[in-house]
Image 1: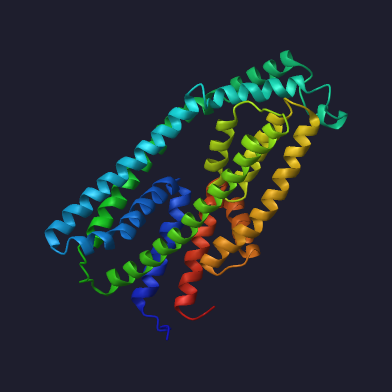
Image 2: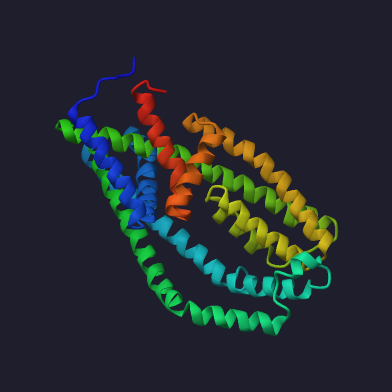
Amino acid sequence: MKSTLVNKYDIAAWILIGVAMLMVLVFHLLPALLAGLLVYELIRVLTPYIERKLPAARAKILAIALLAIIIVGLLSLAGAGLMAFFRSEAGGITELMAKMAQIIEDSRKILPAWVLSHLPADAITFKEQAAEWLRTHAEELQGAGKEAGRLVAHIIIGMIIGGIVGLRDAAHDDKFKPFALALVNRTSLFGDAFSRVVFAQVRIATINAFFTGVYLLVLLPTLGVGLPLVKTMIAITFVVGLIPVAGNLISNTIIVIVSLSQSLSVALGSLLYLIVIHKFEYFLNARIVGSQIRAHAWELLIAMLTMEAAFGLAGIVAAPIYYAYIKSELRARDLV
């Protein structure tokens, strides 16, 4: 039977965890938190295999320490490889943006009047508006480079912390005093909520990228239509697919605009295909994520909408994890 007893240590731990969850969003530390939790959960998942192979305590700790270093290294290399791909000629984001701008300019003759009213009159006007935007946001753009550097530093530090915590847990030091034990229980539930939501979202992003790849690499070429920068669009679809709801909007917009390079009918066909696929993914998302945290789709959507209003994009990313954790706490007390 689930415990419904609440003591002062549990209350203090809930308050501290609640404040920490809020501060993570207020001080823009979500990337560090997610990176640390990812490393920690990977170590936790792989540790039992090491324990079975290496029963000796000293050898086990050394093996887990090596595992933590390998995981941090592989994740860092994966991130660097992804950035290198997007900067390369094969997957250049800059080239994609330039291509999209050119496609919009070239498509003026086939677009409806109500769409044209929201677009620049010509390429010169587009460049003037872009230049004006750059002048207006010059300080923000200068700060973007610094923020990118801080983001990378936060992610690396978060992964290191996750590795250290995973290594400490592997030592099975269970001699906690009451308040520390209450905190460990809270963080354990939070880590479990993270693993269930994030690994489910990775599966969804993979399925999303797969169906998009089938459309771009198989279906369109079979119909005699070849789009540029297909690999880049598939990679972007997977990466932004890790962001619930908003990620699909980003990838869909890019694919539909690039489809305009062929014809309006191809663009409309792409839009129709993506709508059908993402309607299917909507139910799949509800089934995968919702079944993991025992929540209906409307619950997750309300949580994401509320968090987005309060914290922007970071709120959308954090909402399923935070909601899963809160629901886990309620279930642990047999309240829901």
